[in-house]
Image (cartoon, rainbow, N blue to C red; front, side, top):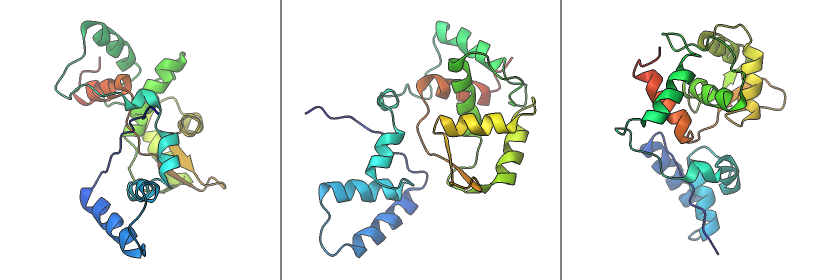
Length: 183
């Protein structure tokens, strides 16, 4: 049976250790393989291992280029075109027409949302309003939820960023904009 490699990211290794320790202490016997996978997934913010697996696509599992590696010449042209959707403060100026461009731009907005924190509806609206200039926070919120970058409660009162590894193109755009390379 082939094995799918899934990345697991922990913002705070100390919090991960505490969460694992408390779960292991509550277990009456050593956990099975699946129970251990579930414990690891819960300690990093997922409901269980299936939730982790569902939130991670195989494309995201591929190794990422090192942070020091710059984009290739072909990638640089695409990054510059994508960066034109943002102003010099990193705010999204207009809504991209193509789906692939939208996804890359939404990953940038995702990277600027607070991690591991629930926001109420007003707070997520204000955060998104600060991140764009075309005045449609509902469109951004809906697309972020549809792409699985943000989750919400059934009554839409609380929102939170889903911790995932951005695809290589989105990660390159996030780095490109962070370095102040936007045109």
